[in-house]
Length: 224
Ligand SMILES: C[S@@+](CC[C@H](N)C(=O)[O-])C[C@H]1O[C@@H](n2cnc3c(N)ncnc32)[C@H](O)[C@@H]1O
Image (cartoon, rainbow, N blue to C red; front, side, top):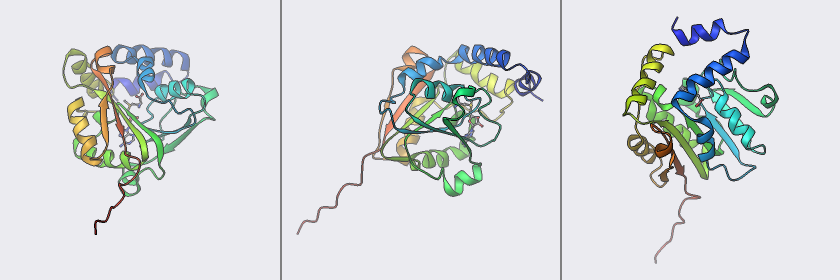
């Protein structure tokens, strides 16, 4: 067993220590509070789908910052959300969508906002197009697709890649920079507007892209 999962297993009876170690380790790579600050979750009662729960710290921070947001989170494994605070468990709807289910049905519903944070670099390159198409499909017309990931340059990015591959044990981790991600977003929703936020300047190599779906299909005008 690789170091990350082994450490988590051996700390099963110590949630406080697990949380502290996880936050300290993750905090070296990304400032999650700064990320939450940059998320444009301005409509308080909106519905959010978070794709890729992981330990649940990020989705927990989002739910706490936006108390009226309706929050659903999904992962490909039921082993998710172990660090979601007890008092948030009733508010955050946890789902499992296997890769086969995502491929055949997508995520089932549509949401005002869909967030993928540090998910794409864990997805094998050949499967990324399909995930992007499904993420847009889950975003309602006029809704927002938020993609946070890691630039593929610089020492911190190298360290993060190495740590994902050899400490977490995800050997097919491959970084995807903001330009390539923007290209992928536009490829599957050509009429979307995709903008970068200032996250990359403030917390390099982390970046956040905001994709806005157009409200509705353009009306067909007939010229007689
Ligand atoms: C590094 S964690 C990030 C978790 C969380 N988004 C965060 O930023 O803290 C990546 C998560 O994405 C999940 N994942 C990988 N491929 C996925 C897919 N196709 N659909 C949904 N989740 C996926 C993994 O199981 C893992 O829990």
